[in-house]
Amino acid sequence: MSFNRTAAELNLARGSQQPVLLLPTDYPRHRRTYAYDTSEYALSESLTRRLGESKKEGNRDIALLAAVYFAWICRLSGEREMAAGIAAAAGDVPVFVDAAAARTFADLRDAVHRSLISPELPFDGVCETRFSVGFPLRAEREQLNWQLREREGGWTVIVEYDTSLFRNATIGRYVRYYVALLEAALADPSASFAGVDLLTEEDTAVYAALNATEAAYDRTATIHGMIERAAALYPDKTAVSSAEGKWTYRQLNELANRTARMLIDRGLRKGEFVTILMERSAELIVSLLGILKAGGVYVPVDPEHPDERNRYIVEDTGSAFVLTKGKYAAAAERLCAGIGSVKAIVDVEAGFPAYDGADNPDAKVGPDDLAYVI
Image (cartoon, rainbow, N blue to C red; front, side):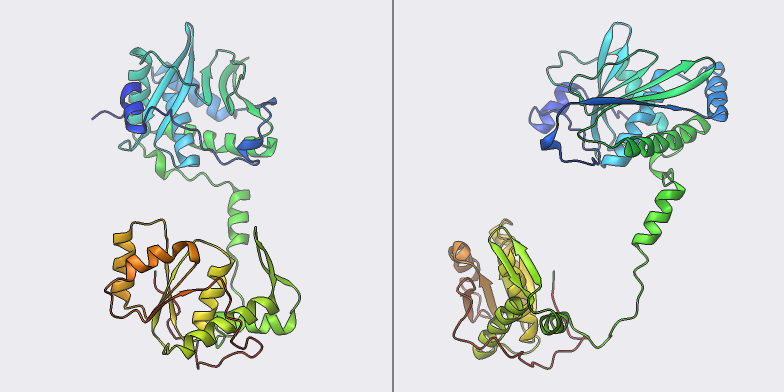
């Protein structure tokens, strides 16, 4: 089974685009300045010893170490098609690895080895990262370059990185992830690179803190009820902000109240489905709150999805109403043509000023009632 496709095959599969390095960055990519710094990290004595033992056994070669680097990229980015320039005596060799079917470090090692002995040329793209064992690297336009170098009986990881993308602390954390993968690969090349635990004690503590969300709360509360209480307590605080403007909690609640009264006036019954056909926007938030206040069940539908799929959703849910915006009115008419359950297609952009927004409607909605269907 082959885990390494040729450059031509990868180009064909991607429409001639080279694999993009999608590592998590600290800063946005569109603000890159291509200013570089270098950090060095000495490997532990035990890992250095293990590298020496592996070398004696004939297993420590650039292919395995580069395979660990590809495993590192895969684990951090989630990408399966990867490219890196591997430094060699005659210059960089572009190595393309498709890890979609790879399971172990050995799989990746074999893919790298095949590419190194039979490089796919010509290569007219730019690898966004390079890897080296023993050969010095100098960054040009890469995101980061990764070197392993043996010095005075010890091994060091040297990372040259774009400081407009990564913080030094992030690079240090990334090196610890690579080291965890390297230790696993040297211990057992047949091990799954996806099964190695990369989290450090610090990561585990942060993860635990972020997920320590257990707290007492009012179990009789509803989503729209929380907004109503916020509107009473903090009426002038900003609730929703978008490119088009912002609404306070009072404004948001009143707009949702008007939407709810419009639906109730048009005959929406508690538990009936209402499709929302619009992009993510402030109007979407008002629409879903208004539906909940009226006792309805909202069904979000993405206008960018195929008409056939969206029509199926409207028909399958038996939606009583479709809330949309003017630019999607024609699409809504197409979707709802011949669907008997739809009572009306409603453009929400006007805001329904004819209805009262000051008082909260009471549709007898409880926390156990259905809120939405996706």
